[in-house]
Length: 323
Image (cartoon, rainbow, N blue to C red):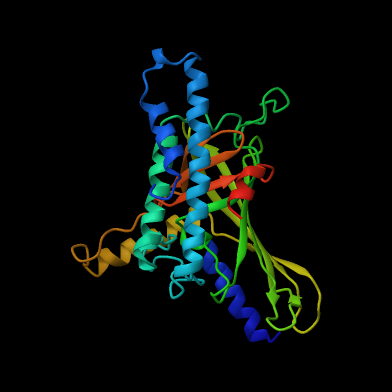
C-alpha cells in the first residue's frame, strides 16, 4: 500500500470522529391491546405492558426487515467518509440525518413506519432509569447489572456515519457498541467487511479492518447520556506493502481545545464585523436520550436527532428476522 494511500485513509478516519409493512393481524391485535381499558384485562397492568412491548418489538423487527428488502430492490443511500461523502454536515460537522425518500417513495414510507413503532414503544419504556449505575465506581453490578451495560449490535440508524453499504468506497461494515457503565466508558466498534473477488469468491481484508472509538459517558438525568470522545483506534492489516497488523491511536481534541477554537472563530467574526451575517458558533453538546430499553432492545436518539436501534447479540429473534 502506497504511503499516499495511508494518509488518505487516515484523513478519512479523522473525519469520521471529529406501518404499512407489518402483518395486518398483528397490527390489529397490537392496537386493540393498546386501546383496551385496563379493567377488561384479566392480568395486571405490568403484564399488559409486557405483552404490548413484545408485540411492538416484533413489529419493529419486521419493519426493519421490510426496509432492508426494499433497499435491496430500490437501492441504498451510499455514504462515504467526510463532507464530500455525505457523512457529516459542512458547517456543524455533525453526522447527517439520512433521508430515505431520496431512494424511493416506498423506502421512505417504510422508514416512517419504523419511526411510528418507535414512538409507540417509547410510551411503554419499562426502564425508568437507563443511566442507573453509570460512572458510579461504588455501584455493585453483581446485585443489579446497569441497564445499558454490555454489548449492543446495530439494527438500524438514520445517522450517515453509522450507515454502510457494499457499493460505497468505504464498503460494508458491522457497527456495534460496548458499554462499561460503572467505569463510564463506551466504545463504538466498526468492523469493515473484507473485499470479495466476484469470480473466485476469495476474501481479502481491507487496509483498515476496524475502528474503535472510545468515549467517556456520564448521566444527565434518568435517560440522558452525555458523551465525550477520547480517541480512535484504527486497526490496519498492512504496513505499506507488508502484511503486518498494527493499531494507530488518534486522540480526539477535548472540550477545552474545542472551546478555544470556537472562541477564536467568534473573535474573528466580531473583528471583521460579521455579527449580522454570521451566527455565533457554539460547541455542540454530544449526548443521546434513551427512548426504550429492556434486556433485548435499546432505542435512543442523539442530539442531532438521529435514531439508533440496537439489539443484544444473544437476542436470536432479532438476528433471525433482520438477516
